[in-house]
Image (cartoon, rainbow, N blue to C red):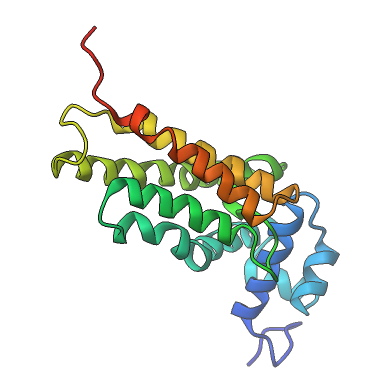
Length: 205
C-alpha cells in the first residue's frame, strides 16, 4: 500500500534529484518548502514521509551530489600518469563541470560553506568532512608521486594539496558569480604555473 499522501507515481530518486538542484541553486535556508515541493512534484506530507525533514532531505541531496556529480572532477587524480597532470586535470575538469549548461554553476559541496546557513551541527560536520575529503585525495596522490620519485622523498603534500583545493573552491565561487569556463581555465593555468615552486625541495632550516 502506498504511503498516505504520496502519489502513486512517486519516484523518490527523481524527487531527490530535483531537490538537489533547488538546494544547489539557492542554498539551504533560501530553499523554501514550497520551492522544494513544487520542484519535486509532491506535497509537504509526502516530503516528510519520504525524507523525514528539510534538513534530512538536504543531507541526502548533498550525498547524492557527491555520488553523481564528482566523478569527472576526481577522475584525473586516479587516472593521470603524473601528479602534475593529475592536478591540472582536476582543475580543468572543475572549470568544465562548474560551467555546464543545464546545471547550477559551481560545486554544491563547496558552496555549502557559505550557503548552508541554518543547518544543525551534524550536517555542518558532514559538510566540513566532505570539503576536507578533496584535500585528502590530493595528498594521497602527491604521496604516491613522492614514493615513485616524481616528487622529493621528503616532500610535505599537505600545503600543496590545500593550495590546489583552495584554488578549486575559489573557482566554484567565481562560477557562481558568472565566470565563464575560459576564465576558470585561465585561473587553473595560473595555479599550475606555481607547481615547480610549490614542489621543489626545500633547503634545511
